[in-house]
Length: 166
Image (cartoon, one colour):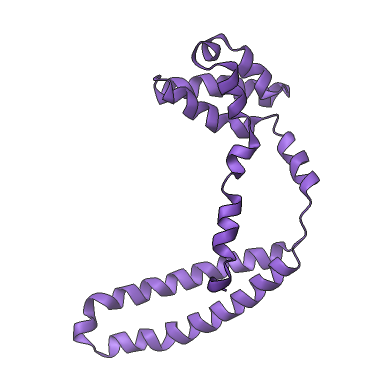
């Protein structure tokens, strides 16, 4: 609902990052202070701090008014026919000792068919004879577990919203 604000914050982050590069270029010459340092600092320090203050204000408002629709998110994930799990299958196949290239070939041929035909990816990979030789049904089922990708969400929120860090 806030694409303009999100895009603006993304663009302004590049400006701050660019200013940090100018600051980093000053570091090797700190022992030889001259006006080339201060001329850069006179611009990037006030500009960056004012810009960061503005960005934090806008970001806080964005988060405070953020609307999340879990059912829509699930519906959007289902529209992929399970293709979002292809990377995990590729990695599990590679763990079984086949080359990454071979694993990619096995996953890709099923992914392309799923995408082009609208068939569930799970159905295709679970019936693929080459994949069945390498992954058990339990291992394959585990590859399609969304919770695997969300397992660290609580830890991330704890780190971000610790009271002593606010």
